[in-house]
Length: 374
Image 1 (cartoon, rainbow, N blue to C red):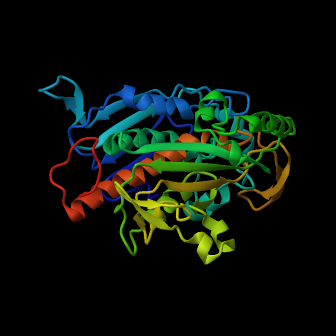
Image 2: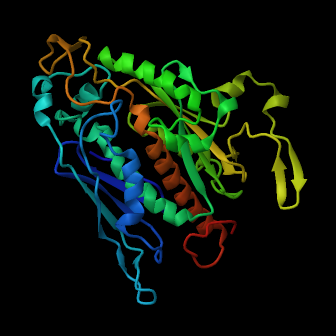
């Protein structure tokens, strides 16, 4: 199985399966001299960790990360820093229940990648989906924590859940501070009880529902990305579409821009004391594949969880027609835990874009945590 690696200079390879002994990633291309310990990575994994409420899977995984390589003691400070060599991270799986999948070992679950994997490889790990499981995203979040170190404090990454099923937030009530005060990463406090009611009814019915996550990167300077085939928005879209259950990505106004006039879509500019000031951000911070200095905004649509209790028509490996009912521990809405994953993938793409921009346009020696114009 190929294509387990993404990125160009900042390259991430993830490994492991949902019910294997561990999952993890190898990060190649991280510059030396960045302070890095498990304590820098663990908080981001804790945000994605399962079992933190009744509306997410009850699989109990501590997601404790170990750094296996790529760091060493700095003789000047005594702290642990990156060495410039590959960084290997490992997260043990401790709460697998493979028996939950015994009854469907030879069945293709509708909406899952079971059939596609089997058709391609002739073999598949049916235990929780194996490599196709959303459990793999923990490794991405760990890699994203390292990418944040490369970007430094100048770039702020954040994401919010903006829609569950048919219920979208009211943008007039948007408050980033609210996402820390509810279990849904919701920026609209009045939407929280509506989502709770919707999810409770969905969960009791044994069904599932979709969601939309909006991610934002603030502080990215103008100039990152490259035309024509290294466009920043294209690479962001590809990375976000690679997340499990992702079925659509928008940058800026996205599909909504099709209904705008040319006047509405044009992000007008004026000159400020520190440089250009944009009067709107329909482009989502990227024009011609290159960052403009505006906030980079992307939205990701996630399909409903395919593992549901309702019987669905399917076939098995023998070609027989069957009905499949998936038991076990599953998220009724995968989008609830997707915000940290969206942030992580944006961080990895932006860290890679920063290093490539510096390599192409110059800028002198790498200064840890200080990305910017070359």
